[in-house]
Amino acid sequence: MGKRIIIAGGGTGGHIFPAIAIANALKKQDPSVEILFIGAKGKMEMEKVPQSGYEIKGLDIAGFNRSSVIKNISLPFKLIRSFFQVRSIFRYFIPDAVFGVGGYSSFPVLRYAQQKRIPTFLHEANAFAGKSNQILGRKATRVFVATGGMDKFFPANKIKVTGNPVRASIVHAAIKRDDALRFFGLDPERKTILSIGGSLGAKSINEAIDAGLSEFEKNDLQLIWQTGKPYAQRGKEAATGHTGIWVDEFISRMENAYAAADLIISRAGAMAIAEICVVNKPVILVPYPHAAEDHQTVNARNLVSNNAALMITDKEAAQKLVPTVIALAKDQALQNKLIENITPLGIMDADDVIAKEVLSLIV
Image (cartoon, rainbow, N blue to C red; front, side):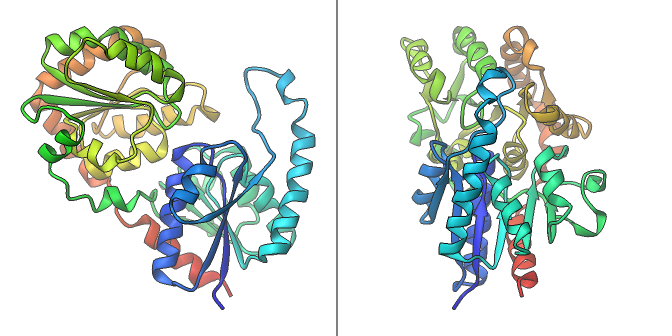
């Protein structure tokens, strides 16, 4: 009988897709491994994980709401309830190890596992560790991190620097640019901008793109525009009457989007950056300013300091984003410099390295 591993966390694609990459690597290295995911009910993991072929159990839990204190009143009750749900899941699945990928649903799962002295593993994708991961890291068996210098957050003897796991479909993509552009119904002869605000969308990026659609057209630029769900309808309405625009709430084939893109506009989530480093394209990063400990700005500055990306703050996006994109599209020398500097930062095998370490430490 194979080892049983629970993978906990989610909330955004930045947590879910690396978790699936790690699960796939575990199964590849040991096909007898049984994997169960645990996420938060109503969140995107409840859809994306089963689509990848894995079972998932949902918890009745919510994260801390920074914009409304009143909405946090029920949090302690939800947390207590989630612990009872976790206990029930553990009795049913009986894990040999538990892996946390971030997101508030990971905390009660790993906390319960540590109370039961079950080996726990963490992956911290960002250059600034979240509070719950810092707490969990004290008793974790191993903490996998994206970059060095994380011993200010975790015990040094528990850290292993691996980089961030990137989806195999992106790492091993062999699609040609022209074929990718045809997939989106776009013209291979025109320069193409890819705008990805994250799996849930990005208001400032969307509004800037919306206002600048005619400028893209004037400068003969095409657009692949992932709006996220909240802006999907508005984005589709805005694109009506314009040429060279593909718009939708979600891109299911990101490998095609990356292959089609000449330039990328993106939030600065750790996983978005990891993917962009692997595909080595010129990027303008617009960090989400309300991320915990402003970690997206820290992530973005790591690239900017290496002359591997451009950065515009969220509040500057309305005025500066579209002009900066257009200027970069016309500056081939700067594009080449950004590509040259971002290419060495791409890590292709983080999922395999993590899986090998986990399997070696489960008794």
